[in-house]
Image 1 (tube, rainbow, N blue to C red):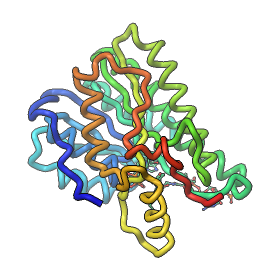
Image 2 (image 1 turned 180 degrees about the vertical axis):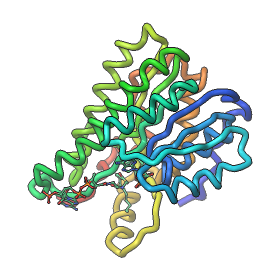
Image 3 (image 1 turned 90 degrees about the vertical axis):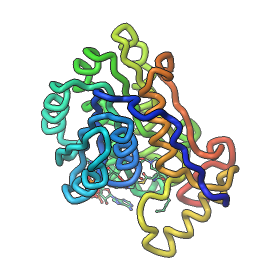
Length: 265
Ligand SMILES: CCCCCCCCC/C=C/C(=O)SCCNC(=O)CCNC(=O)[C@H](O)C(C)(C)COP(=O)(O)OP(=O)(O)OC[C@H]1O[C@@H](n2cnc3c(N)ncnc32)[C@H](O)[C@@H]1OP(=O)(O)O
Ligand SMILES: NC(=O)C1=CN([C@@H]2O[C@H](COP(=O)(O)OP(=O)(O)OC[C@H]3O[C@@H](n4cnc5c(N)ncnc54)[C@H](OP(=O)(O)O)[C@@H]3O)[C@@H](O)[C@H]2O)C=CC1
Protein backbone atom coordinates (compact mmCIF):
# COMPACT_ATOMS: atom_id res chain seq x y z
CA UNK A 1 0.00 0.00 0.00
CA UNK A 2 1.40 3.42 -0.87
CA UNK A 3 1.49 6.18 1.72
CA UNK A 4 -1.65 8.33 1.50
CA UNK A 5 -0.93 11.73 -0.02
CA UNK A 6 -2.30 14.95 1.43
CA UNK A 7 -5.81 15.45 0.02
CA UNK A 8 -6.05 19.11 1.11
CA UNK A 9 -6.35 21.12 -2.09
CA UNK A 10 -8.98 23.73 -1.25
CA UNK A 11 -7.86 27.24 -0.45
CA UNK A 12 -7.59 28.82 2.98
CA UNK A 13 -10.47 31.10 3.91
CA UNK A 14 -12.81 29.40 1.44
CA UNK A 15 -15.71 29.32 3.88
CA UNK A 16 -15.09 32.43 5.96
CA UNK A 17 -18.35 33.42 7.66
CA UNK A 18 -20.22 30.26 6.64
CA UNK A 19 -21.87 27.85 9.08
CA UNK A 20 -22.35 24.08 9.13
CA UNK A 21 -24.11 21.42 11.17
CA UNK A 22 -22.32 18.05 11.24
CA UNK A 23 -23.96 15.01 12.84
CA UNK A 24 -21.66 12.37 14.31
CA UNK A 25 -18.87 14.92 14.77
CA UNK A 26 -17.32 13.22 17.80
CA UNK A 27 -15.17 10.61 16.04
CA UNK A 28 -14.05 9.22 12.73
CA UNK A 29 -15.30 10.69 9.49
CA UNK A 30 -17.49 13.32 11.18
CA UNK A 31 -14.55 14.61 13.19
CA UNK A 32 -12.35 14.80 10.08
CA UNK A 33 -15.09 16.67 8.21
CA UNK A 34 -15.60 19.10 11.09
CA UNK A 35 -11.89 19.86 11.45
CA UNK A 36 -11.42 20.43 7.72
CA UNK A 37 -14.43 22.74 7.53
CA UNK A 38 -13.10 24.68 10.52
CA UNK A 39 -9.67 24.90 8.86
CA UNK A 40 -11.37 26.39 5.79
CA UNK A 41 -13.07 29.02 7.96
CA UNK A 42 -16.46 27.41 8.57
CA UNK A 43 -18.16 27.73 11.92
CA UNK A 44 -19.34 24.21 12.78
CA UNK A 45 -21.90 22.87 15.23
CA UNK A 46 -21.27 19.18 15.90
CA UNK A 47 -23.82 16.70 17.23
CA UNK A 48 -23.37 13.23 18.77
CA UNK A 49 -24.62 11.34 21.82
CA UNK A 50 -21.43 11.40 23.89
CA UNK A 51 -19.94 14.63 25.17
CA UNK A 52 -16.31 13.52 25.64
CA UNK A 53 -15.51 12.78 21.97
CA UNK A 54 -17.20 16.02 20.93
CA UNK A 55 -15.11 17.91 23.47
CA UNK A 56 -12.00 16.26 21.98
CA UNK A 57 -13.04 17.44 18.52
CA UNK A 58 -13.50 20.95 19.94
CA UNK A 59 -10.02 20.81 21.44
CA UNK A 60 -8.54 19.75 18.10
CA UNK A 61 -10.42 22.59 16.39
CA UNK A 62 -9.13 25.22 18.80
CA UNK A 63 -7.01 27.73 16.91
CA UNK A 64 -8.50 26.91 13.51
CA UNK A 65 -10.01 29.88 11.64
CA UNK A 66 -13.60 28.65 11.99
CA UNK A 67 -15.15 27.62 15.30
CA UNK A 68 -16.52 24.35 16.66
CA UNK A 69 -19.28 24.13 19.20
CA UNK A 70 -21.38 21.10 19.98
CA UNK A 71 -24.63 19.71 21.34
CA UNK A 72 -25.21 16.21 22.66
CA UNK A 73 -28.24 14.55 21.14
CA UNK A 74 -29.43 11.24 19.76
CA UNK A 75 -30.40 12.02 16.18
CA UNK A 76 -33.15 9.40 16.55
CA UNK A 77 -34.87 11.69 19.07
CA UNK A 78 -36.76 13.77 16.53
CA UNK A 79 -37.95 16.52 18.89
CA UNK A 80 -34.48 17.00 20.35
CA UNK A 81 -32.67 17.11 17.03
CA UNK A 82 -35.25 19.45 15.51
CA UNK A 83 -34.64 21.87 18.39
CA UNK A 84 -30.89 21.72 17.82
CA UNK A 85 -31.25 22.26 14.08
CA UNK A 86 -33.49 25.26 14.78
CA UNK A 87 -31.04 26.72 17.28
CA UNK A 88 -28.09 26.27 14.90
CA UNK A 89 -30.18 27.41 11.95
CA UNK A 90 -31.18 30.70 13.56
CA UNK A 91 -27.52 31.68 13.34
CA UNK A 92 -27.51 30.77 9.63
CA UNK A 93 -26.88 27.45 7.95
CA UNK A 94 -24.88 26.94 4.74
CA UNK A 95 -24.15 23.22 5.04
CA UNK A 96 -25.72 20.18 6.66
CA UNK A 97 -23.62 17.02 6.84
CA UNK A 98 -25.64 13.89 7.66
CA UNK A 99 -22.83 11.68 8.90
CA UNK A 100 -24.10 10.04 12.11
CA UNK A 101 -24.86 6.43 11.31
CA UNK A 102 -23.83 2.87 11.70
CA UNK A 103 -25.06 -0.67 11.96
CA UNK A 104 -24.09 -4.14 13.07
CA UNK A 105 -23.02 -6.70 10.50
CA UNK A 106 -25.32 -9.73 10.21
CA UNK A 107 -26.95 -11.91 7.58
CA UNK A 108 -30.56 -10.90 6.91
CA UNK A 109 -31.76 -14.04 8.68
CA UNK A 110 -29.90 -12.83 11.79
CA UNK A 111 -31.52 -9.40 11.85
CA UNK A 112 -34.48 -9.17 14.20
CA UNK A 113 -37.32 -6.80 13.38
CA UNK A 114 -36.15 -4.56 16.21
CA UNK A 115 -32.60 -4.62 14.88
CA UNK A 116 -33.85 -3.76 11.39
CA UNK A 117 -35.98 -0.93 12.75
CA UNK A 118 -33.07 0.48 14.79
CA UNK A 119 -30.80 0.66 11.77
CA UNK A 120 -33.48 2.13 9.51
CA UNK A 121 -34.33 4.65 12.19
CA UNK A 122 -30.72 5.83 12.55
CA UNK A 123 -29.67 5.75 8.92
CA UNK A 124 -32.87 6.80 7.14
CA UNK A 125 -35.57 8.23 9.40
CA UNK A 126 -33.20 10.48 11.33
CA UNK A 127 -31.61 11.75 8.11
CA UNK A 128 -35.04 12.76 6.82
CA UNK A 129 -35.93 14.48 10.10
CA UNK A 130 -32.69 16.47 10.25
CA UNK A 131 -32.78 17.41 6.57
CA UNK A 132 -36.40 18.53 6.69
CA UNK A 133 -35.78 20.55 9.85
CA UNK A 134 -32.83 22.26 8.15
CA UNK A 135 -34.81 23.22 5.03
CA UNK A 136 -35.87 26.78 5.93
CA UNK A 137 -32.38 27.71 7.08
CA UNK A 138 -30.70 26.15 4.04
CA UNK A 139 -33.19 27.92 1.80
CA UNK A 140 -32.32 31.28 3.34
CA UNK A 141 -28.62 30.82 2.45
CA UNK A 142 -28.90 28.60 -0.67
CA UNK A 143 -27.12 25.93 1.30
CA UNK A 144 -26.02 22.37 0.64
CA UNK A 145 -26.60 18.93 2.15
CA UNK A 146 -24.07 16.12 2.06
CA UNK A 147 -25.13 12.71 3.37
CA UNK A 148 -22.52 10.07 4.10
CA UNK A 149 -23.57 6.79 2.52
CA UNK A 150 -21.72 3.56 1.75
CA UNK A 151 -19.74 2.35 -1.23
CA UNK A 152 -21.91 -0.22 -2.99
CA UNK A 153 -25.19 1.34 -1.88
CA UNK A 154 -26.65 0.72 -5.31
CA UNK A 155 -25.25 -2.82 -5.68
CA UNK A 156 -25.57 -4.50 -2.28
CA UNK A 157 -23.17 -5.72 0.36
CA UNK A 158 -23.52 -8.96 2.30
CA UNK A 159 -24.16 -8.46 6.01
CA UNK A 160 -25.58 -4.99 5.41
CA UNK A 161 -29.18 -5.57 4.24
CA UNK A 162 -30.60 -3.11 6.79
CA UNK A 163 -27.97 -0.44 6.28
CA UNK A 164 -27.90 -0.64 2.48
CA UNK A 165 -31.71 -0.42 2.47
CA UNK A 166 -31.56 2.70 4.64
CA UNK A 167 -28.79 4.37 2.60
CA UNK A 168 -30.56 3.53 -0.67
CA UNK A 169 -33.55 5.31 0.86
CA UNK A 170 -31.38 8.33 1.61
CA UNK A 171 -30.10 8.29 -1.97
CA UNK A 172 -33.66 8.26 -3.28
CA UNK A 173 -34.57 11.07 -0.90
CA UNK A 174 -31.48 13.02 -2.00
CA UNK A 175 -32.36 12.75 -5.69
CA UNK A 176 -35.96 13.70 -5.02
CA UNK A 177 -35.14 16.69 -2.85
CA UNK A 178 -32.51 17.76 -5.38
CA UNK A 179 -35.48 18.23 -7.69
CA UNK A 180 -37.94 19.64 -5.16
CA UNK A 181 -35.47 22.12 -3.65
CA UNK A 182 -33.60 23.11 -6.83
CA UNK A 183 -35.80 26.19 -7.07
CA UNK A 184 -34.51 27.22 -3.63
CA UNK A 185 -30.88 26.85 -4.67
CA UNK A 186 -30.38 23.97 -2.22
CA UNK A 187 -28.14 21.13 -3.44
CA UNK A 188 -28.05 17.64 -1.97
CA UNK A 189 -25.47 14.91 -2.61
CA UNK A 190 -24.34 11.59 -1.16
CA UNK A 191 -20.78 10.41 -0.64
CA UNK A 192 -20.13 6.67 -0.54
CA UNK A 193 -16.82 5.99 1.21
CA UNK A 194 -15.15 2.62 0.91
CA UNK A 195 -13.46 1.13 3.95
CA UNK A 196 -12.52 3.93 6.34
CA UNK A 197 -10.36 2.95 9.28
CA UNK A 198 -11.74 5.20 11.97
CA UNK A 199 -11.27 3.44 15.27
CA UNK A 200 -8.80 1.04 16.78
CA UNK A 201 -9.06 -2.41 15.31
CA UNK A 202 -9.89 -3.92 18.63
CA UNK A 203 -9.63 -7.59 17.86
CA UNK A 204 -8.30 -10.10 15.40
CA UNK A 205 -11.72 -10.51 13.73
CA UNK A 206 -11.89 -6.79 12.97
CA UNK A 207 -8.35 -6.83 11.61
CA UNK A 208 -9.18 -9.81 9.43
CA UNK A 209 -12.30 -8.07 8.10
CA UNK A 210 -10.28 -4.97 7.30
CA UNK A 211 -7.66 -7.03 5.45
CA UNK A 212 -10.41 -8.70 3.41
CA UNK A 213 -12.05 -5.37 2.56
CA UNK A 214 -8.77 -3.81 1.44
CA UNK A 215 -8.01 -6.92 -0.62
CA UNK A 216 -11.41 -6.50 -2.31
CA UNK A 217 -10.62 -2.87 -3.19
CA UNK A 218 -9.13 -2.63 -6.69
CA UNK A 219 -6.86 0.27 -5.71
CA UNK A 220 -5.71 -1.74 -2.71
CA UNK A 221 -6.10 0.80 0.05
CA UNK A 222 -8.72 2.06 2.48
CA UNK A 223 -10.22 5.56 2.19
CA UNK A 224 -8.68 8.07 4.61
CA UNK A 225 -11.30 10.14 6.45
CA UNK A 226 -9.45 13.27 5.30
CA UNK A 227 -10.22 12.39 1.67
CA UNK A 228 -13.92 12.22 2.52
CA UNK A 229 -13.65 15.57 4.31
CA UNK A 230 -12.11 17.31 1.30
CA UNK A 231 -14.86 15.99 -0.95
CA UNK A 232 -17.52 17.29 1.44
CA UNK A 233 -15.87 20.71 1.34
CA UNK A 234 -15.66 20.62 -2.46
CA UNK A 235 -19.36 19.79 -2.74
CA UNK A 236 -20.21 22.63 -0.35
CA UNK A 237 -18.08 25.12 -2.30
CA UNK A 238 -19.05 27.13 -5.37
CA UNK A 239 -17.08 24.62 -7.47
CA UNK A 240 -19.94 22.23 -6.76
CA UNK A 241 -22.67 24.75 -7.49
CA UNK A 242 -24.22 22.69 -10.31
CA UNK A 243 -23.72 19.30 -8.68
CA UNK A 244 -26.83 17.93 -7.04
CA UNK A 245 -28.61 14.61 -6.69
CA UNK A 246 -25.32 12.72 -7.02
CA UNK A 247 -23.79 9.69 -5.36
CA UNK A 248 -20.01 10.02 -5.40
CA UNK A 249 -18.19 6.88 -4.34
CA UNK A 250 -14.73 7.54 -2.93
CA UNK A 251 -13.64 3.96 -2.57
CA UNK A 252 -10.72 3.02 -4.81
CA UNK A 253 -13.19 1.41 -7.25
CA UNK A 254 -14.54 -0.98 -4.61
CA UNK A 255 -18.05 -0.63 -6.02
CA UNK A 256 -16.81 -1.76 -9.44
CA UNK A 257 -14.91 -4.75 -8.12
CA UNK A 258 -16.08 -7.63 -5.98
CA UNK A 259 -17.79 -5.18 -3.63
CA UNK A 260 -17.40 -4.67 0.12
CA UNK A 261 -18.95 -7.56 1.99
CA UNK A 262 -19.02 -7.94 5.76
CA UNK A 263 -19.77 -11.66 5.40
CA UNK A 264 -18.56 -14.26 2.95
CA UNK A 265 -21.08 -15.94 0.64
C1 LIG B 1 -13.81 -2.54 12.27
C2 LIG B 1 -13.40 -3.17 10.99
C3 LIG B 1 -13.19 -2.17 9.89
C4 LIG B 1 -14.07 -2.45 8.71
C5 LIG B 1 -15.04 -1.37 8.46
C6 LIG B 1 -15.70 -1.47 7.11
C7 LIG B 1 -17.14 -1.15 7.22
C8 LIG B 1 -17.75 -0.51 6.06
C9 LIG B 1 -19.18 -0.20 6.25
C10 LIG B 1 -19.63 0.57 7.41
C11 LIG B 1 -18.94 1.03 8.45
C12 LIG B 1 -19.57 1.82 9.49
O1 LIG B 1 -20.70 2.16 9.46
S1 LIG B 1 -18.54 2.23 10.74
C13 LIG B 1 -19.56 2.90 12.04
C14 LIG B 1 -19.74 1.85 13.11
N1 LIG B 1 -20.41 2.38 14.28
C15 LIG B 1 -21.62 1.95 14.61
O2 LIG B 1 -22.23 1.15 13.91
C16 LIG B 1 -22.19 2.49 15.87
C17 LIG B 1 -23.64 2.77 15.72
N2 LIG B 1 -24.45 1.50 15.78
C18 LIG B 1 -25.48 1.36 16.63
O3 LIG B 1 -25.74 2.28 17.39
C19 LIG B 1 -26.26 0.08 16.59
O4 LIG B 1 -25.58 -0.84 15.77
C20 LIG B 1 -27.73 0.26 16.15
C21 LIG B 1 -28.37 -1.06 15.96
C22 LIG B 1 -27.79 1.06 14.87
C23 LIG B 1 -28.50 0.99 17.22
O5 LIG B 1 -28.77 0.15 18.21
P1 LIG B 1 -29.67 0.54 19.51
O6 LIG B 1 -28.75 1.19 20.48
O7 LIG B 1 -30.89 1.25 19.14
O8 LIG B 1 -30.20 -0.79 20.03
P2 LIG B 1 -29.46 -2.11 20.33
O9 LIG B 1 -30.04 -2.55 21.61
O10 LIG B 1 -28.01 -1.94 20.24
O11 LIG B 1 -29.92 -3.04 19.16
C24 LIG B 1 -31.27 -3.11 18.73
C25 LIG B 1 -31.48 -4.42 18.09
O12 LIG B 1 -30.35 -4.68 17.21
C26 LIG B 1 -29.89 -5.98 17.48
N3 LIG B 1 -28.46 -6.14 17.26
C27 LIG B 1 -27.47 -5.34 17.73
N4 LIG B 1 -26.28 -5.83 17.38
C28 LIG B 1 -26.51 -6.98 16.67
C29 LIG B 1 -25.69 -7.94 15.99
N5 LIG B 1 -24.36 -7.83 16.00
N6 LIG B 1 -26.29 -8.96 15.33
C30 LIG B 1 -27.63 -9.09 15.32
N7 LIG B 1 -28.46 -8.20 15.93
C31 LIG B 1 -27.91 -7.17 16.59
C32 LIG B 1 -30.21 -6.21 18.93
O13 LIG B 1 -30.21 -7.59 19.19
C33 LIG B 1 -31.57 -5.58 19.09
O14 LIG B 1 -32.62 -6.41 18.63
P3 LIG B 1 -33.40 -7.51 19.55
O15 LIG B 1 -32.39 -8.59 19.79
O16 LIG B 1 -34.54 -7.95 18.72
O17 LIG B 1 -33.81 -6.82 20.81
N1 LIG C 1 -15.91 3.46 8.68
C1 LIG C 1 -16.24 3.04 7.48
O1 LIG C 1 -15.59 2.17 6.90
C2 LIG C 1 -17.40 3.63 6.78
C3 LIG C 1 -18.34 4.42 7.42
N2 LIG C 1 -19.40 4.90 6.73
C4 LIG C 1 -20.40 5.75 7.37
O2 LIG C 1 -19.81 6.98 7.72
C5 LIG C 1 -20.46 7.51 8.87
C6 LIG C 1 -19.44 7.76 9.97
O3 LIG C 1 -18.80 6.55 10.24
P1 LIG C 1 -17.49 6.43 11.15
O4 LIG C 1 -16.84 7.73 11.30
O5 LIG C 1 -16.72 5.29 10.63
O6 LIG C 1 -18.17 5.96 12.50
P2 LIG C 1 -17.89 6.28 14.00
O7 LIG C 1 -18.60 5.21 14.74
O8 LIG C 1 -16.44 6.53 14.26
O9 LIG C 1 -18.63 7.67 14.23
C7 LIG C 1 -19.99 7.78 14.24
C8 LIG C 1 -20.36 9.11 14.84
O10 LIG C 1 -21.78 9.22 14.84
C9 LIG C 1 -22.24 9.42 16.16
N3 LIG C 1 -23.51 8.74 16.33
C10 LIG C 1 -23.76 7.41 16.19
N4 LIG C 1 -25.06 7.17 16.46
C11 LIG C 1 -25.61 8.37 16.77
C12 LIG C 1 -26.90 8.76 17.16
N5 LIG C 1 -27.89 7.89 17.29
N6 LIG C 1 -27.14 10.08 17.41
C13 LIG C 1 -26.14 10.99 17.30
N7 LIG C 1 -24.90 10.66 16.93
C14 LIG C 1 -24.64 9.37 16.68
C15 LIG C 1 -21.12 8.87 17.05
O11 LIG C 1 -21.05 9.47 18.31
P3 LIG C 1 -21.81 8.91 19.59
O12 LIG C 1 -21.54 7.44 19.64
O13 LIG C 1 -21.24 9.69 20.72
O14 LIG C 1 -23.25 9.22 19.38
C16 LIG C 1 -19.90 9.30 16.25
O15 LIG C 1 -19.61 10.66 16.49
C17 LIG C 1 -21.52 6.48 9.27
O16 LIG C 1 -22.75 6.83 8.69
C18 LIG C 1 -20.96 5.21 8.67
O17 LIG C 1 -21.92 4.23 8.50
C19 LIG C 1 -19.53 4.68 5.41
C20 LIG C 1 -18.63 3.91 4.73
C21 LIG C 1 -17.54 3.30 5.38
